[in-house]
Image (cartoon, rainbow, N blue to C red; front, side, top):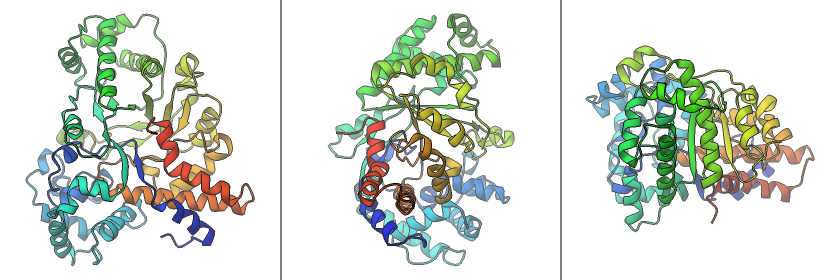
Length: 454
């Protein structure tokens, strides 16, 4: 527990510490819960899937292949990967990754030794022993973590077979898909043309026309909804929306592989509006993650592929960027659009005033580089005065590292308690109000904004 807790803060924290975990956005693999096989080894569990971990190690000159990352790292000995990680554990001082992994080792895995080069083998063996036990299988951990809902992120082309298997298994865990259609919306994706062919084959729709393309997207959304989805997810570097009077022309160029970068930018901006309009129709909450320049390390992109920790924050202009979308659907109080930013300068200047006005908007929690104790405190300080609490979206962990989910939610709940205790000290509201807000921020906002209540 953080050292600057006083009695008031601790009381607020204790009241929400044990609430169920609502995890409405993340990147866990549904196969874990459909097959319920033991996790392979400590490296696969704590190092290889976690870009927070391997990007820090890479920054100190450690090759990704030596960390078991990507196709080039698939022959790496997992024990050696874990040793390498443990020997460089000191690199994580001051980072949220250290807080999360400390929690996982201490609380989740009940490891009493401190992690270091000298204890790496002993800890590795202890974790291996625990992973072989039934109470450390994915479904058992899901239940032990008190997870009420966990949403995965799935491409528009996903067959959701593992989600179906989970539903058919009789297990009571609630694991839902999320519709991530960027691969068939954003023509900058190198596989865009092939993705359209696959979309046509999957849906049986003729994508020779723009209307057929829209029909295919509606078909996939309908299937995701039938499988339990409550949200979509979209990533965009430069925030831009515009409504094209005749999207057919640009669509045909992009479908044929002859469109320009400007065509791709304009078309994706148009399709974000189409996605928002479809959300009005089918009720899916829309998530927009903006302000990240993806795959900036060309060498890693060429040799290891995408999502290798080289995505870097860039400045964002939400006001002008979303103007076309908001003036088309933003006054609809039944629509929910959650905005996530890596540009913290926009919280007080843009996002809080926007969410404090437009009925459809909610502000997502601190994301990626900012989901830390300090980042959470900065977030509350910048958004609450203008947006209030009810225009926020609660918390989501946005992680591939399943065992870190309780740690991340615990850090958020500590941050909530610290913030609300400070508000009490300032005389802004009383203890009863703070208790209600604490539960709102811990669970209820996420349930409501993502349509998970009930």
